[in-house]
Length: 149
Image (cartoon, rainbow, N blue to C red; front, top):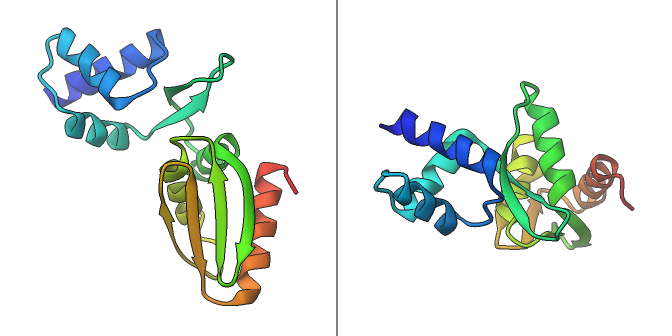
């Protein structure tokens, strides 16, 4: 049942611009799958879905088929990144609304030197670094990957 449900999720997101987990859960329920938002959340993580911006300014779930994990993480960072600033031993990253968790996971997955870890909200990521000097190095890496300054 899980594989059929996940296949249906991939089908739905390829046919429609689905912006929220609740919207996806409702469509799955209409298609005969009895799901909760928590189940949909687990499926989204298992499928490694990402959110991207649409031309209309909204967001939608997409399946990024990329065998290069580093390339996929870099793409998530670029798509979600808005700005960043250093503060003591933190780098504070502002993202597109709803993208902070994906951006935090991408940054954690890139295994930057000096990075202790990330905490994400809806549109903000706090990246803790081990040393003050690591703040500038992490910001330089992020700017390089996102093409920003």
